[in-house]
Image 1 (cartoon, one colour):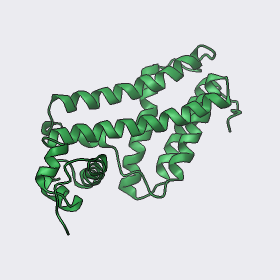
Image 2 (cartoon, helix red, strand yellow; image 1 turned 180 degrees about the vertical axis):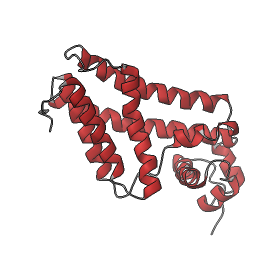
Image 3 (cartoon, one colour; image 1 turned 45 degrees about the vertical axis):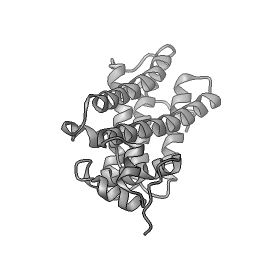
Image 4 (cartoon, helix red, strand yellow; image 1 turned 90 degrees about the vertical axis):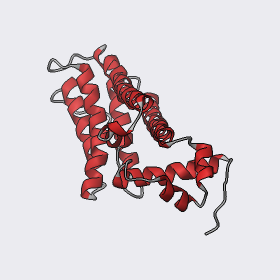
Length: 214
């Protein structure tokens, strides 16, 4: 294999991130070496350091990429839900169903949750990485909480519920579903978990009734 610096260009950087994400999810960040990344990418160490000054910079970039990818997916399905219904509950239920269908159609299971991986290896990272995965989790909460707040303006829940905890349950089902799907090799687990959360929310705000988003 020809080795070169490839010191510039977004393609090389993206390729390194793809290789690194796969390696980190397979065996952890600490066990992933720069040497193996540059070998697979076909570049020199100087080429790696052109894009990432150190491994913490790589970790930060991996999380930023993961965050942006999740945001794009959530933005898309939840926006489509709002386009299909003016009712905040129905719109959120539609969005969750679209999310479940989207992940079910992927050619293979989600590889795993980078946030969970990084949290369990937090001693390897600097404060910037810690701050980012903290921000990501809080962003997930705020994103889903905004939809729940809109629902509560129109519907009273059947039980007293902490909306922050309910928002966390949505993100936990999604990210935890990735972990379960990877652990079992069963890609159907992730969409099933999303649909179960969807059913819980439907029953919480419309107990004993069907949802028109079915």
